Length: 512
Ligand code: BES
Ligand code: ZN
Ligand code: ZN
Image (tube, rainbow, N blue to C red; front, side, top):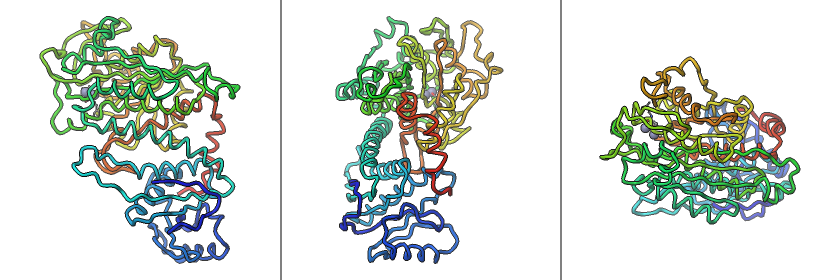
């Protein structure tokens, strides 16, 4: 897929594309008066829903695809646009149309951004393991932006950077675990740090982790022949970036992402049933997401200090595996009894949270495919999140909404906190039947003092086993965009209030 952003249609297109909602057309102001009338008569002639995409009607003597931008249920109007653009791109490629003009002169920036994201999503495929790679037909999209062309070109550059990060996360998550061991993940992160200006990296191996008391990693990782690692990536945009210099409101915040990076989770000695095991290639989604997000944030040169901690281990069975009932001392001094070896994510995350404190986090976001309970509670479309800070929680919701990623606020219910207590140790790694809450309460025990924190349980949203929105099967890339947006808003590049107005207000032209 190629995109050209132009002011007026070049005349080279083999087809026009128009987005419509119910019976009204969107972004059409570059059409001739005659064409407007034709469009009106097509839409008026339609039955009452459900509305399908209409292909190759003649408008202005040009084959035109009418794309329904309100087809699916439950999506925001921005997400409808992503889906519409995604379907359009798939269709155009399948029908082998070389050039398609999309009329977008009336689009708001957010709408334009959504359409571009949708086009990019259609381009993704993961065929590294197929014996024969099939090349999809390459379509060029001419985005007719009218007087917004210059502004939209800048947006397209941003979307390209965001998309690159999404693709990176998805590729890492989809790669099988024997090919993406903790050491391989480190290799990838090293390469990214090397080629991303402003991004530095620190890697701790098993020996260093043990020496420094990061015993969560050691406890989980020691049963595997692939040693655990903890990576800390750092980017300081508060001082060095060009954008920081221009921006009067340079942020004093230090935003730290922490990602669960279980390159595979067998469950350990508390072995998982076979049916739920293959999906555990995605148990490093949190780590992949934070790596991808910080790469994009550094590339975008956002004026804020951001770090990303990847907690990497393989939860395997070996003669050194942690035994149920074993007790270890975590980095913050608390002792933990391993009640269930399958509740390993929270153990490595205890180290990640400690590291966030050591490097001076003011705000922590941890991402983890942490509990099956969260999958059962909210499914694949919504991530549950927890927070000890109302302001940060509101930001999560707002940033998610702007990025078409759904978040639902869950309680850090203190009534269930006692269930974490152990007879011998301070804590155990299981708790109340409310499994997602129990895990979050456990993590809270390791959050550094006076630090705003939010925990995102992405067990349901990171990886889908059937086609969902713009993902066929596999990694969704969930969270990458919301993390970038959070850094963007905290940095002051986007004013929070104005941004909310944009997504909720006038720019959303038509509600489905
Ligand atoms: N990685 C799993 C959680 C998971 C489940 C992720 C399904 C994606 C899809 C996690 O390590 C786990 O096994 N959690 C246990 C905890 C329990 C033993 C307390 C769970 O949720 O069953
Ligand atoms: Zn597990
Ligand atoms: Zn796990």
